[in-house]
Image (cartoon, rainbow, N blue to C red; front, side, top):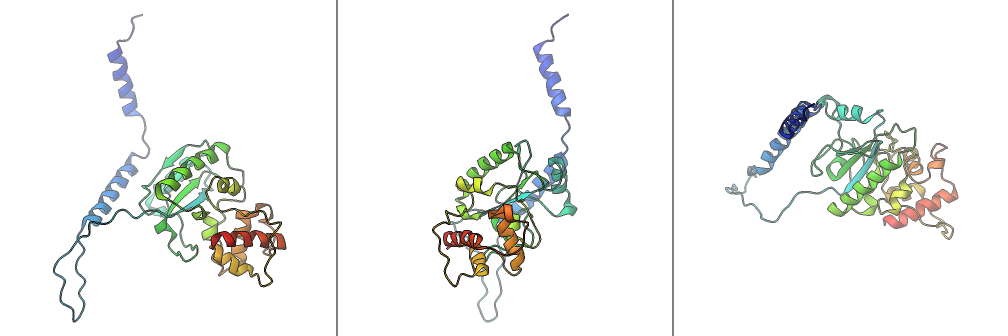
Length: 275
């Protein structure tokens, strides 16, 4: 049997590759078109704003000192969608009005879906500290997980690599790595109580409480005020407590809305780190 010439082998290979299915080719094209449209908006010279009694501004004077706005928070989610493919479809359908910057599949594969400088629609109605538009200041990361099972080790390893890159690229403070439920405690529970927040905090991504054995609570310690100082929206204090427990005391995250003395000490330790 004659050996296939090398040139013919490569021609066949190129033909096969070019015919391989690309399920998101159409939405990638839409992405490029929309990004180009926003680029055109940025290039425009703003029109003067007329003010009664003030001489009209006749010229635009562009400063030379500027750069891109950068994200200052990372919000972690779980998808609760069953598979990465389902999540990809959700994030590429205009009618869903939801997206994220990154999706990490259960096998650890990292999928980048939106430029970090662009505003994804992942946080929804949310609040952390005094920030009421989290989408405008954050990067959203979705982990393929149903919320009912532990996260895969390879998935967490990939997340740690990604977080390290984002932290150094944008100089994001350790305290600003938080969960969707932290910023929207009434609506959301992700990432679930299975998420390894302590493991992340040990690597510098998020806060964790210190040894509380030596902590003596002030007589006037106020849990609601402490939660607010950490960052939680306490308008629904019960929801804020549940979110706090889910993040820092997952073993007790399904029982009650009260904090015992040990849990108050944990909150006090976090409050001190947030000041």
